[in-house]
Image (cartoon, rainbow, N blue to C red):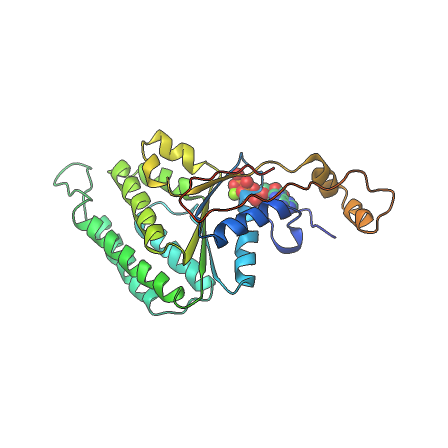
Length: 277
Ligand SMILES: Nc1ncnc2c1ncn2[C@@H]1O[C@H](COP(=O)(O)OP(=O)(O)OP(=O)(O)O)[C@@H](O)[C@H]1O
Ligand SMILES: [Mg+2]
């Protein structure tokens, strides 16, 4: 195996090493119809694992949508990111154009509205929220179209808490964060069993919602804490000839591989939590 020395970005394909057990657990959870919140300290490999799960889903014939929300700061920018991610995943449905119209309408609304900055103030939960809900209905229709028949969809949303933290700084930020989290929660509920969701971020969504009193908006997600690599795998990573030596059963084989049993997954809703690593 040859791993290029890429640091910084999430890794994929040939640069993605090991995590077989974790990926297996994750995939089984998704197959069982669970939606997952992947948590870990910084730089442990969350984004890379999500990319691997998306790759696995593509191999299953699912539509796999990779959403990186780190540059989003308002609801329309998040919608635009969803649209762009769907297009990158090869989705060509005209419903995407409809969704783009909703994003534009919401952008116009936000640009022309004084949201709490003095003068005549419009409360977002009125007209703007209706645009947002309407966008949710269009997005749901899109997901229905994508998951018709036996086809399933996997959506990985990375850096959702960064987007939410940016949104929270905007006028009426608390209400808007609440609305976005409820919007996503409703979508997960309405597409249950057909669309699987993995959410993660360099800032934990669990700690974010706890801080903002919004725990109820993510309590449908199954928690998957990701641990660091085992010592043995870390050695493999730094000395890539070792796995090859292992494969060839040479005397370099220093330790047995980790063999943890895979947990059984109940269909979603049991509040099942597992520990990886
Ligand atoms: N499975 C892996 N195989 C090889 N390298 C990995 C793997 N997982 C993580 N790395 C290394 O760790 C770095 C961080 O990985 P990644 O970006 O996936 O972590 P993260 O937990 O999402 O980080 P952050 O908290 O910053 O979002 C990568 O750039 C890569 O060098
Ligand atoms: Mg990451």
